[in-house]
Length: 311
Length: 262
Image (spheres, rainbow over the protein chains, first blue to last red):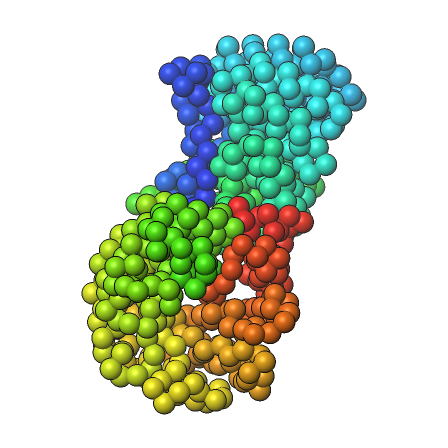
């Protein structure tokens, strides 16, 4: 007798988030990237609807990278020293669907750019490339509170994804995203209780829960990836059972974590594989958006996604 | 927890007045307030004040569904009154209720099937109120068997162990809690369980405290649904907290607010 598969039907749905606004939506992007909207656990196509594949964003910075592994910098060549050329390679050569701009140069220790300089950089990037954009601060809370409102305003109407809001520092970013029509990243330190609490705090400011993307914080392969997996799985199960405060798509900063490991730095091929396998594992955990660094790893993961989604 | 608001009932003076004067606003305001406080469905009962429940229950149904699409729990001991309510309903419905008497089951189960309604079965019969857990289980088995043989989905059936006032039948309360737990084990898939909460404190002095404590214990026994006063905010807070402790919802510092955002 043929084994009958047990199919699970869930009452909940993950929020569908659109990144990028076209001209007729008040923006100037050439496309819109959509994530989320699923009614089932990852890749269980028969149990429910999975309207959007996981998407990949290329990570770029507003300055030349500081601590990138040689293999990473050599993948882009000397171009990486100029942020706009770096972005151009991602968009033109590697057909990036989405760029994730990290404003590292605004950090007090790495250039300390002013809000005006940061805003000008964002404007120029948006003018030169019509790809939808994620913008994240340097991680220095005090400085981010100065530069992120300026960056947000410079991108007003482009429906970017901006971040990262954290439990101790979210109000300024939420106010900017509200005023300028962006989506927001809510970051919690591998902690489902804080992830849920932060989503509530953000929504209490009048921000629509359905425009939040959660950064659950991940560890790379071999560095606590399984903790991220279990948090993501638990949040997804709760969301699909009807908990709207946890029904956000996930963004995972794969490149940043994978290339920190000594294994990735040990030899060039291993670094690419480490980033690829970290991404592939996170897709199984429910990642909707992967921020990646190495073009070859991106290519492998893209192919992997196509294979997974082949009907 | 599936919360059924109990306040649209002709035994309350405002609803009795609304029924007499056919004042829709009173009933609709009562419906909306209960929903905003967390009711997932609304119990509709004409109560003893109604001279003509065959007209009054459909009127309540029509009045309430003008302002909400939440399920309606049609509360009457008379099958004919329930059928008039079912005819008027566009919203989903729950029949409240059948007893374990064959003559009632033979009318109400086909009625529930015909109108695609859920059904509450109270473990009581013409012989009287059960005196212990085993009698409740026997009556539950009769209802379940009958439903199952009639092709009625067990998941659409709510079993009510019939809650007795603590000042009348103190010795039975633990049996009632045990019955809630054991109802779930009679069949697979299991029926849902339900109680009319306020009965437990009928005639007692500290009604609110007794209701809250009993609800917590019933939730811990596996209760799925209750007919209660959703406007009692502390009662609902306690319910949310009990479910949190049972790991039914994920904790966060604002878990009460999180539950209400659901």
